[in-house]
Amino acid sequence: MAVEAPTHLFPYTQQILFALIPVGATVVCHGVGMAVVRRHYRRFAPHLLQNAGNSLARTFFMIAIVALMLLTHFAEVIIWAMFYLAMGLLASTQEAMYYSMEYYTTLAISVHKLAGTWAGFGGFESMTAMLMFGWSTAVLAAVVQKLHSIDE
Image 1 (cartoon, rainbow, N blue to C red):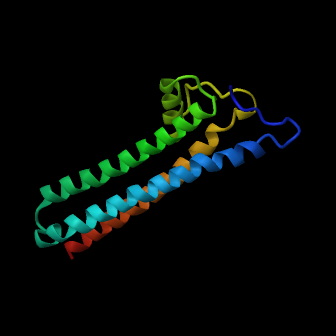
Image 2 (cartoon, rainbow, N blue to C red):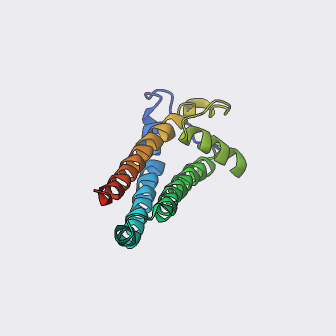
């Protein structure tokens, strides 16, 4: 059964407070994922520095970096889906994953809205995801910039 917010409160008060749970878990997950990217960079970048002309190695390195980031984002979709299931907001794992994937990617075009006072909750997932995508973009830009500095 879904938790219902008292109607006398600002409708988003409870949503904001409850959103802190998956937001916190998402930030921790992203921090771990970006630490893995950093370790990957530190492990393999010296080899790329020694073989600066090897574009194939750089290509596979960048594919690995992007794959790690995608896996991190997918883990975050799972975090939100688990929250929806635990709160009784969605009935099945498939529905929760689909809903989460649509809101995490900010697409949200074919998903139904959550019931009652939870109708706008997907927006918190979208806001969080935009920040996580920004974080990933900053890390990816730093990696690309460092790889390009090898050529100079």
